[in-house]
Length: 419
Image 1: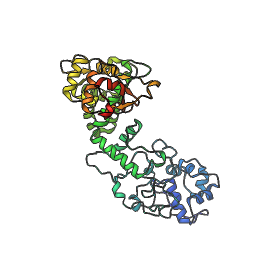
Image 2: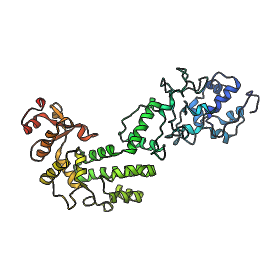
Image 3: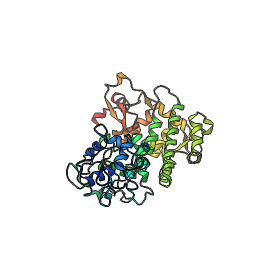
Image 4: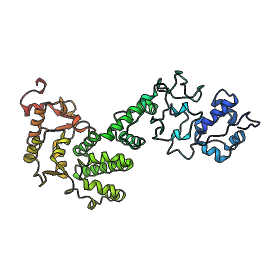
């Protein structure tokens, strides 16, 4: 530490220190009441903390007060790190690390990471009252609002799973599931760094990584059954289908070893040769695909579904019933008892009906709520009767399919409400 005419004591910045942390220590050593008051002493009234964080301030003035070089000042700020780091003025911390050090590293502000020492997500809200952590608190490890140590009972939020090679992979999965509306735990921005939310969301990602079956199955089922309202053509659905496959493979590639479990699940629904080809030549295959060169992927012959997978996609109708239904109503199976993708898409198109205004006031029953024997009756008659599946919400496919009660009762011969 040194002294100058501006401040009685000038601490040296730590090697990896965040600029607001440095100002906090400068405030402490020189007896100022808050970081804000210190900023006003240095810059006057018009400089905000967020400008300090981003390095958007007069560095010449700052250097005169702190005797730091421009290079040393830049190293403290997030001015060139905005894509990798959260550019925010509040605290982001590992509660357990706070017990072991007297400053805040800039690395704690890096996006999509958790503490490598304690396996806990970095947080910006008090685990007890959920208020934002403030720099103005007397001790960083004590919440300004509820006065509770933020490390108290924090061990229950530790994410420690032996089957995960890299815990930061969970954030890659989180981003993927969140961006595709597949995350059960959703959040508004104001609680984005709540430890309770992050723990539940990341544990959901652990479950997906270890057992990705449910989400992959439902997403593929959604794409199969979806009918594009503008272009009723197979190529539209094929495009969506393969784009989803590319996205999943990109996720697998980003996860490295952890992605092998997801790859195995995906191979249950997609020809493994296609997965391997895209995995090994991802950029080239994606280019050909996005530019419409279908010579690289033979839609008609390479993609097929065995009846077990067909059964899963249709919503777990038993195998024998599917075999009977397919063989009598759909197409001939190939020599491996598989259904080609185009045939399956055509089948799904025939089942679906575009919703219209006049349909909104009808009485409907959710398909998923029907007894299994009624489901079998429906599938046995779908292609030979006026009965159609009305889809109000394409996000969940069969879970949100509704059936017109009048049409249903004509088929089964009795009122479904009295069943």
